[in-house]
Length: 403
Image (cartoon, rainbow, N blue to C red; front, side):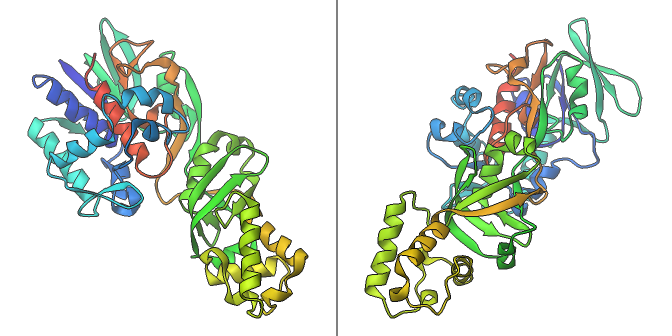
């Protein structure tokens, strides 16, 4: 049997290795359109490669996918995050689970993952061909014929696994659409918020460990660490929100208002009670010297200024109006977003080959026999935290069964 893997990224290598292990006598070839393999693995997680998430249940794991979560829930029973961790550790890549459940190689270096994949492909005699982009796929009898960009002879294979990754433009998926696959328009996911008109950007570098964020006028909500940057806001809370609202925020042209609850307390009465207790306990202390919720000093001063409250004012002089202003700025601080920025060099898309075109029990195309899918080329994407790689491992593992 001859097997072609389209794409030399995370899903492609995992599919190739698993397919060869399942069918030792098969000839397996990886085709990568660029000069570099595993480029995204190299840079992900700040060069450390967050390979999966250590969450404890399939239910929790599947909730991390704004698109594809329901389909993945069943797939995770076959190959989930626990299986992925065992897979890497059994191949001499020790791992570490951080407090936030992000899983990294113990080396804290993505090269450990790359070296593992390359060692496995050498051991299994898997072929890798670079600068071999696929332009067409045609059915020829019971086999599939691949046509390459730049010309050259076509090649036919018994089985083909498409693991070409996300495409930023719909035209990058036309070769699959021509086979009658339904395509969901790709739009960016996992991006940060630009706030060119907001002075909060002057506080760049400040991190609030646990904030609640939401998009005004929608049901989109998120929580977690929030980072103020020189262009606006980032951090896990913002990135998760961007993933949850990827398509809606694209439709809005990336112009909307984000509400920030700096206190991480959902009940305003609880915030009122805390501030009243500060007034009672520290009436002679000035506002700037007592920071509720351990907010960073510069941020607290900024919020006081935004509330038209002098930092030198005493807590005992706050009064009802001043108290209400503080409750409002702590629980419902509003900022105008005008644009987005890509998160580091990690490009994640919402969209791709519709799951309606794929049998998720096997990852085989419903319209083209012997053609399978793995990874981000499908309309699957997760929030930040190792989930996108986990989807790649899971779908590649199932596709490589070639059922």
